[in-house]
Structure formats: C-alpha cells, structure tokens
Amino acid sequence: MTGSNVSSRLMASAPSGTRARSRRRRSRSGPASRWVYLGLVLAALFALVPILWALSTSLKPESQVLSAVTQWIPKTFTFENYSTVLFHSMFPRYLLNTLGVAVAAVVLTLLCALPAAYAAARLRFKGQAVMLFGVLTTSMIPGIAILVPTYYLAVSTGLYDSYLVL
Image 1 (cartoon, one colour):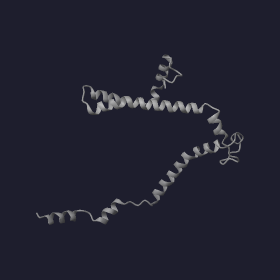
Image 2 (cartoon, one colour):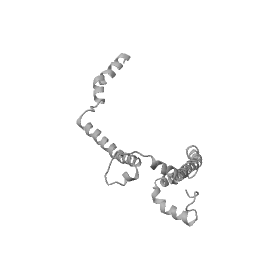
Image 3 (cartoon, rainbow, N blue to C red):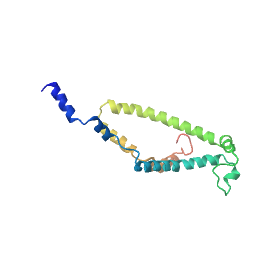
Image 4 (tube, one colour):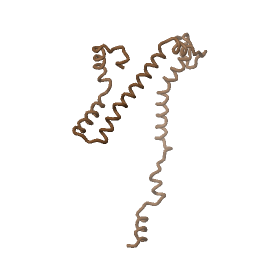
C-alpha cells in the first residue's frame, strides 16, 4: 500500500467537516432551554431575596423595622444599626476570635497534614494501606456526629469556655 492510498481511505471513512460540526453543535434556543433559564432566574431570586431583605432592614430605623407595614425601600436611610454593631457590641471581639481560631486551625492542620501527606505519597511502609483507609473513613464522619462527644470532652476536662477548646 502506498501512502496516498492510506490517506485517501482515511479521508473517505471520516465524516465530512460540516456533518461533524452539525453533530457537535446543538440548538440552545429551543423552548426547553428557555424553561431552564427561567428556572435558574427563579432560583437566583429565591436565593437573593432574603439577602436583599436583610440589607434593606439593616438600613431602616428601628421604628420602621417594627412597623406593621412592610416596605422594601426604607423611607429614611440610617447607618445607626451598623454603628451599634461595630462600636457598642462585642461583635468586633467575636470577629477577631473567629479570625484567630481560623488561622490557628489552618496552620496546625497544615503542620500536621503536610508531612503525613508527603510520607503517604512518597514513602512505602508497613500498614500504609490501613492508615490511608483509616484517614478516608474518619474523613467521612460528619462533624455534627461528633459534636456531642466533643462537648462532653470539653466540659469534663474543664476546657469549656476557653480558647484552647476552640
């Protein structure tokens, strides 16, 4: 067989360019896709309405919030609620606590997980499969399932209401 015979056979068996393109390209302007877009818009509105309501309520004075008449747009805008939260409550302290706990948790997790992951990926040792199976099975336990035992442990060791337990 010569080179030209092989290439002519391959070209003859391949679908033409227009047929291949028409098979790949699907019509996206049909009525079914309109229903999909309508559903997506409704889902987005369902998710955004509570957020917009919370924003609207945060900009209202207390008299309008407690009023029996529901209004989306406040008659008078006020930032007093934000001032109260930021300067007359413990919210900044709670935010700082959360940031500190989150940073500490990430750093400690990385300090423990990185060497273990390196050892599991690069080194071969006895019991490696059992260890990896244990890691996988414990990561499948939902956090809510161990919430009560963790609380009991914190209370019984006297660490309840301290930064160390976080």
